[in-house]
Amino acid sequence: MLTCLDLSFSCIFVYLLCSLALEALPLRKLVLQGCFDYSYYGIYCLLSKSPFLQHLDLQDAMFLNDQRINYLWAFLGDLVSININGCNKLTNAAFFSLLRNCPLLSEIHMESTQLGIGSRPSLNLVVYHQLKSLHLANNSHLQDEDINMFAFMFPNMQLLDLSSCDDICIVKVSKTCCSIRHLKFAFCPRAKVFLTNVGPSNLEVLNLSHSRIDDQVLHEISKIFHRLLQLDLKHCYHVTEKGLRLALENCTHLREINLQHCRKMSTKIVSWMIFSRPSLRKIKAPPHFRPYDCDRKLLFGRCLVC
Image (cartoon, rainbow, N blue to C red; front, side, top):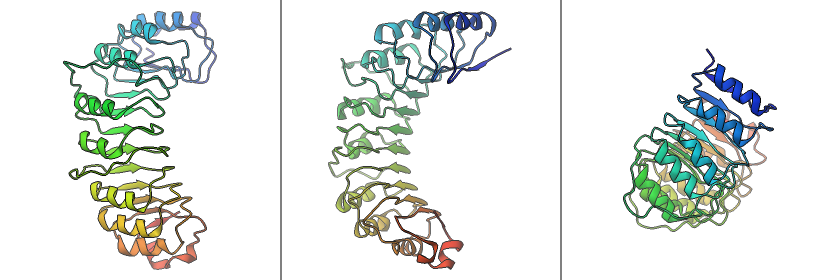
């Protein structure tokens, strides 16, 4: 009996969807990413006959809006993960309706939508302990107050993607979301980085690629995120060797670092990093690095450099 249906990059029709709904129960996983020629009526018919669905991917279903998607949630009480990336008519109303109707969710992908627009619950916030991953990249309307609210609602959240969300303060994220292990903060050239007196973080993976942080900000961030295992600084043009050296003095557990396209780094920094930070196991080197720029014993005996 069919339990998983992946129709990505296929041409599908309402008739096919309804037929599958009648013949393929109990459906557990449905992937429609990249599909076309299906309508709201078709997906409504299918979901209404799939009460045990756990994984749903409706990326780029442009016909969805807050009202329409609210009707779908009624059939998805067992949902564990959902992808509604690119459904650019969805706002706060869709997000909070999803949470109310799908209490088992552990992963939400809601990138490139209108999240941040609309009213927010002001009282009686519900806590969702099971939610672990929240992918919210490219939601330009999100504010710090939204992150504070998410921190209360999702106390066990471990992965948070805020890439291309310009108005979010990275240190406030750290302060309020204490359980986060993986934070994506890439492509945020105008993001606020207010450095306040906050306690140490448990963050292990930090992606700051394509941001405009400088040496001072990187140094201060390293004091807060000193338990980092992976740090991505790709295309961080304002970071120099001075800032990197100061940061690595604090990040004593660092195992991987990405310095690709960091134009203010010399190739000699690679040998220094391997020697001064023995925990490193992988380095994506700055521009123009060649193996002969690094001591061969260091390069091949301790750390992969690529």
